[in-house]
Image 1 (cartoon, helix red, strand yellow):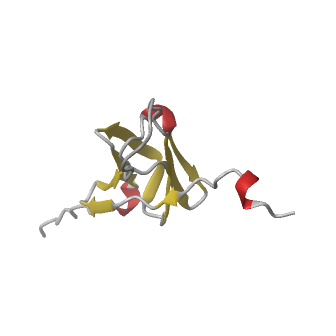
Image 2: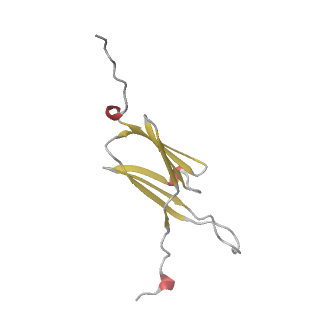
Image 3: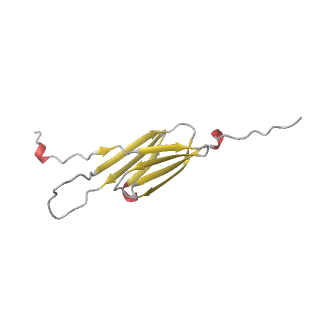
Length: 119
């Protein structure tokens, strides 16, 4: 029997807004995840995938809502990592609902200056 009234609502999954930039030493990702704390944030590398997920939990209120626009649910974003990223050199932080990841670039692919010998 398919009774919609008795089913648990499925958690919504949102793709967070993201900025990515890089320089010669690192790639930086910034993701918006409002309402997510470090306790509800999970970041992992699985082979060539960087997976970021977070959960924004519902706040309990006494009373009835008149308007409800603040969404709750799960954030999920994944990125394919190429061979230039050092998977052992990734730092993550969260502040004011913005997750920042700094991915190190492998030394072997960083630009380097070649010394020129005279004569």
